[in-house]
Image (cartoon, rainbow, N blue to C red; front, side):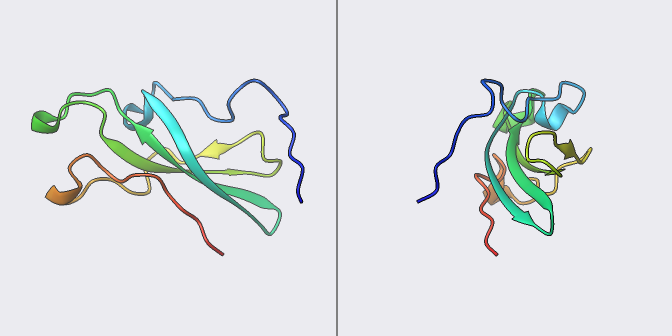
Length: 97
């Protein structure tokens, strides 16, 4: 059995107000450790009004870390809502190796 311990009371990622697509919330991530890096895909929500669907459209972002604590993110989402059936955007990511 693996025993985990909390390293901090602070979240690993916080919303980035300067990125409108992830300005409200970042949550429900999937992460994998591979070749010395932690790769994280996370769900993010915006604050901008979005026509008939309203605010809080989901998108998926990507972040990478060498230590699992300090992450660097991409400026743009890696997955957005592209078709009508996905009007509210993608949901929680999963990663499998």
